Image 1: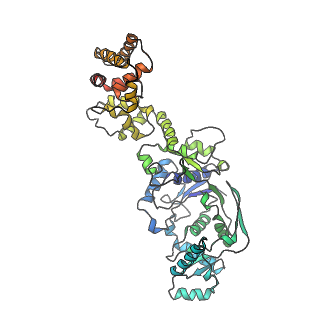
Image 2 (image 1 turned 90 degrees about the vertical axis):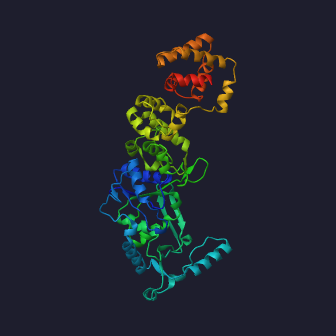
Image 3 (image 1 turned 135 degrees about the horizontal axis):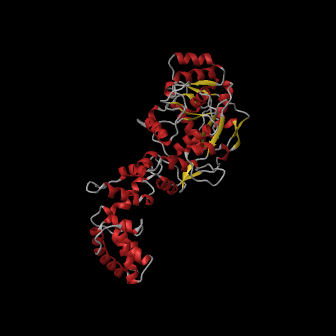
Length: 473
């Protein structure tokens, strides 16, 4: 049978790094075994549905190169791919479970359930439904439904024995059946719960491998009992470790460091994001760090997924992103970086703008950072930070270096980097100074920064007049 995996997001918000990692691992699981990757939208929670979330999911997968072989928008032979369009399917299968004795109609109202919750809280135990309606004869239940009573359909769990399975990552998992609650399959509004719909859909869509977070490890036996009740073969489960941040907190769609929309708008490249998150919770056979998506498709092995939580660190992502920025050819880089520039460049030549942006190509880790590193080229004046001020006051030769260099710059008639380097060399020889005491004072006074690209390129871009003004103020 052909390998088939699925990414099944709920459109309840925009995607974050954890969501994308789930999609990527499902995609790589399929592609590493010459299989198909399916996109299914689990939109049964209509109250939490966010307008535009589906479009963002589709656009994000496309941007990242994780193109589904079939599914929402693309179509295929196993649709519909939106769960809200499959309600009749879920109802049919739920009613079959009732007829076969694996589920039952439950008429308990919210008042009774709330009392059960209060009792559980008083006893300091988790709330579980007590199976009150499981003994109602089927014919009586059908009459009550015909009379208009509200109901849900619950799965009837076995009360004895153990349900076990072998997970690809975590090995054998065993759960006592007595701990499993009679979960709701169909809610009173006719919509299925996630726990039921995903089983029906995975079977009907012939999903062979299910990638999902390890928070579902203990609830998977509920799904296996459903497969058993229907007489279906269950898929292979690949439970992945959670993604947490370096400080141990959870990933959040509200945090700009985690939210994919914010990351992309800040100038993080899709290929850098994909490369980095592939290594969160998965280890290649060697120490290779940089992978294209095609290389990941060949290298990925589900048996090398870790059981430990994966750590997402924005600083590490910045490091990956800076690598991919440096690897871009100049023309592609210029077309990409220019929209991030926020300064007025109407009075600047294209040649000057291109040279400025290329000079700082190796000094940025995301698109928006370009504004921080070039801001003094557009400012009428700048403020030095304490580190710069302290350095300028650290040696009595520094004022002499600055004044000597200013006098050398003043004599330049043909403004180019060769003559700027001559001025630097004359300053060096004239005062017998070198290293940090030569270059750092000139950089600080000229540009306002202690660190940056080659000094001659920086001064050339500032221009003679601006350089002298900055040196002597």
